Image (cartoon, rainbow, N blue to C red; front, top):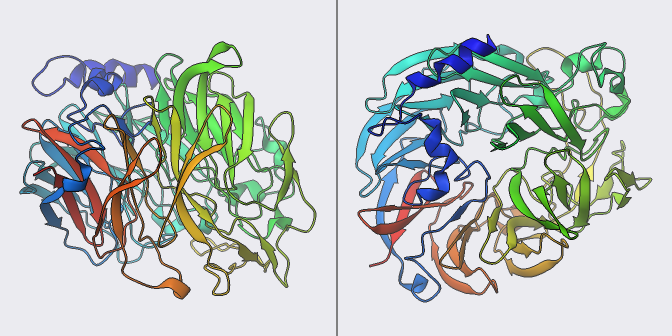
Length: 538
């Protein structure tokens, strides 16, 4: 099967150019007018070399166009822009193609969904992958669908997993070579996680890596009895790809059940881990587990940021990773070696990280029946929203949240297709809701360079540009104590964090901004509420 998948690459020619389709993705940084993949490039910097909008003129940004999506759910899409066409998803797994200059719609694919779907956290979809003349979307009923980029017509539709068992797909796929790589959600339902690759031409599966090893496989000793069968470790966000080492680097989610770890003694590999897979075979090359035997739902699905830089006097291939548990990590992405771990937010669960990066867990921090307060709270010191790295400043930017949670342990009984949580911890505490911030870190030390406080807790990612700007947003899920409609999209000075411009979009923002150019004009797009808002200079 692997040879058949690799042989199909000649089929996918780039629209109008004739070279292999993945060649554009390999050189995505050379097309700053486009936004070709979820994180902007395989390295996931979320950085654009466009500089028409800069620190001197950002305050003059004006609304260029708005596209309202036909949905009652919040929009979490990160649009892609390819040669003047914008491709985005609606929360119900539909796909829309727009004129990137005006927002005028070209086509709209509507996915027929079952009447009952098991999802963790509302009806959402975070985006598509584009390869050649095809658009690919994962769906809430755990299908992967290939569409014609020109018409939106379905070219193939394959079932990745049984949605009745709790599987879903909410993340954007990643196109690698001639394959479409997709993860799955469903950790709250006791699924067994995996990462899949599918032939972009035919939809046939090239390989699957199970994030929970079966008995006899390496790592299986980290699970007790049959707990591996419903152990979670989903792969619900988009990872990164290193072409030089041919490694797909992806984050895995929490073990199941979430807050009662008694039923699964052991480290529970490969949950809460960075995994590096051979792109051609799906075989594991290395892993790094951030939180062994996690009992707080601090999964590791954050986007890995791949940077080549000097480390302690010699060049290294690095991965920067801001983890939900409150530590910023630097790993050698060729081997998975732990190089640095430093808190970027308040955390009270680990005394320190050991020489290999394994946390030294403080006693009295596991969930109890009465409840125990621990920083960070269950939604973490950061979450799925994307970070950014700027080669101009050398800084790593992220949305952070200073918050605590009341962690309680309950009964965990697995029933296929039903939630398998082990309890429901208290979120958004009235007496101490905490605060959100955009933070800039020096990735060489983990030290904070600057901070911009938010009006609400964060639920959106950031974007940096050659114009020395960081774009971000406040107005994610507001806590009960701070319920309001102050949903600001803003531009900050990338070197100092000084506010340059902001606008109240009046709707929940839980997405990632992008920038692109059409007809020589740089534009910046952000989803808010049920709409897509695009800005440009007058």
